[in-house]
Length: 598
Image (tube, rainbow, N blue to C red):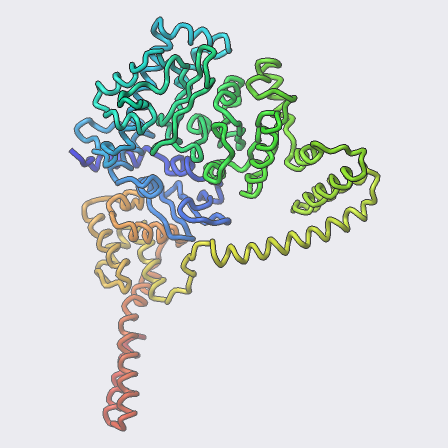
């Protein structure tokens, strides 16, 4: 059965909070009664995306996207209504009866089967680690590294046996084809056409997508073989550039603390989570990408970059921090002693010292850059010293806050006994060049890159009257029935007529005003958007009889005014043909029609 009863849908709607769901994808800030953030459906720099906790709906005043929690999940996840209901149910305590479970349109797809295979294999590996003799050596290794059973459970750590094809046969018996296992990166096909396991005799770390589904693995070898860590290859369900390790585990704490700690590898993430820094995530050892930054920016503004202290780690931290800053993040950089990564530091100095002396003592981005620019320079040498000062002044010219600029210029002047006025003069010239480039770039961005959103036009009086009528009708069924008696479906805007017709039917079935519930009955996305926009209009709590009369009059008068314009065109045509008697008759009709308008 591929439908869900109205009672179940209503129960889910009444249980779930749209603000909580949208917050998984968009960083929201409360302003007045609503929450606002950057729209996830189009690029924008100023928040125009509004979520109403009272009405349980969302609307973007930029691109027009709008609806309820099911509409949001359908649009952002690209799923059907039934799948959106299922995803919403998973976020609540509401159980979907077995016979009513929606048949996912993606269950039989290649990607869904890949995820299912990874999920089964993760459970199998985990069972081998914690419950069998084969996993005892791996379990002892983890214990010696300070990874206890709680951490093993949280991160789903397991063990892949040394058998050549145990995992492949395990999944093959459960209906997974060898071709699928190969394309998922679970199995490897040799030159003789035989399939064997990619991971053997390794401690297995599941890698998840942002919904918490296992899409790949990283395996650490138990003996002295190579490679030390073996990762799944990229596949249809796993792309490193779009993955942030443990993001689904850290997301809630990232939002709560309004800070994300960005690391290079999953081992460091596990170490920091053990240390209580559960807002930690990692880029899987690859350079930070634009896709990953977008995910971060939706959830948090403050990011602390904590990479390895070797040359490669510092270079990566510099690039990552610059990209995050360009995306509008507030960035700090945590520094460690040479040769140590976060995991090593915690083992050597302890969790408490890491929290205070590394994360707690993280540098502002500019302070980090001052250290970065010193690398490889002998500041006693005149040429190196001038080069360093030029680099720093150039960097200061990009700072927007005058107080911060002044602070670093004075610091530079004091350190090298240079005239502050000379530094300010050089910075001023560089700052003008920066502003000129920024303005030119902004102009190009406006022309070529920004989405072409429809301009907000002043609406005619009748159009506004119809919108305000519908806004009151959505909140009060008595108003709706009064409008039905006066207008029926005779709205001038086609979409408004359709919404009114659906609303009359909704109330006649005995439902109470609830825009969230009403939206669940509307399948047309364009109508959902109009309804969400209208329901966000600011209107008086009570609609007076005079106000109602005025709105209805505006709606009824519009087609009459169009008729008057037609008659005026006929009169002018008659006058051009010198048919003055006919023109006079038409003018009398026009006068009578205008009287009726009043």
